[in-house]
Image (tube, rainbow, N blue to C red):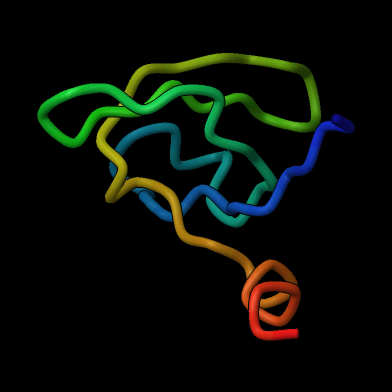
Length: 64
């Protein structure tokens, strides 16, 4: 399966320089946590799932 970066980083308080950057959720954990990988450099962080938002492109694919 190809890498699909269908989310964007939303939080400015944590990793503010990456706000709006494409990323993907690699794994979901308990307590609403997620392992997120960025498209630009492959940086991976464990964070709250509230820190990322789905892109409009991914929502359009689901509806079709």
